[in-house]
Image (cartoon, rainbow over all chains, first blue to last red; front, top):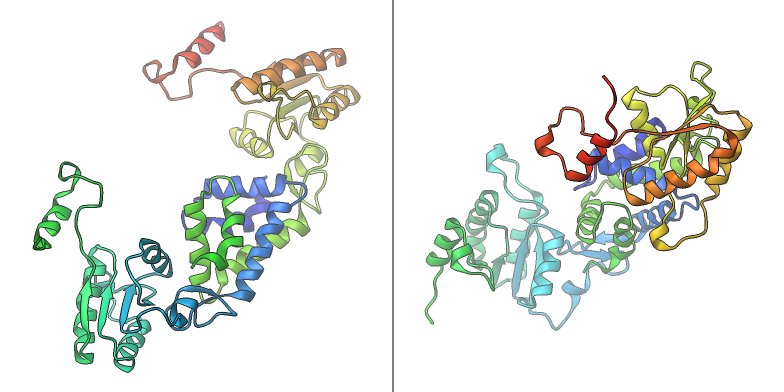
Length: 199
Length: 199
């Protein structure tokens, strides 16, 4: 009986975090809503996405078509000599929320995947190297994740950015704030020990 | 930074089973996809929903605009004297999959909510009574859920349908197939005991 809804269910199930069952539930909810207000709101938002929303051409943050480069790239009060490199546009949001960074950003839109034997390198990596050299960036802060692929990406970028003369740093791995040693996993704790700093 | 995506995030978060975080992830995924193929597929499916998909005007099952009443209502090989009453169009799908029913369907599109003190009764209830009387239905099988509101709905329908002379039955509550007494909850087990049948 759900055959007529198949195209919608399939489209929904392609979204991250949505399985087949949830997609079915959503599709049924949309078709049951006689006013179709939910479906219309979603359509309008998707049209707007197409017309008015962009990833900033400089840093990759989410921005409107009217503000490209984005506010983070054009704000004169931000330090232009420090560049925070993240994997994903959403990570820019997280770093901003932390309040711990006041420089510029650069989203890689991915990372190296040595496990998948990829030798093809993300063109954003080239763009990063060009930008660091051209803008005479003093420090590149790698705010990457802490998995193996991110580690490989960090090592690769450190080597690639060396000729440009920028200092390359990486954010600390350690115990989460408000947490305790009793609850830490051994890998995190070992990293926190290794990253100890003088008081 | 996610402000431009707010309308899309809000629309997504209104869907069942999708929280704010998942909505953000989906919105970012859609905006990161440069070809926008995912967003376009979803838009097309939503347009089709609007143009071509209906709930059957007789039983409420999902159907195409070209088949209304739906195949279940028009199939001459199905018994027309037995009517299975469900709460939701999706439940019709489930009952069909079970292979345990070969009559007609009727989806209530809801149930009584005595806890919310609702005295307003679903207009579908009136439609059901009319249909049972007009089509001289011999048996109404209530395939409702097993919560309190469904129980109230079953009791209400039993009383309302009495004048029409139809037998009103309700599907059994009991242990799930393949499960054991050790894993049953007391309420289910009590209901299974009460519903015991001669062998």
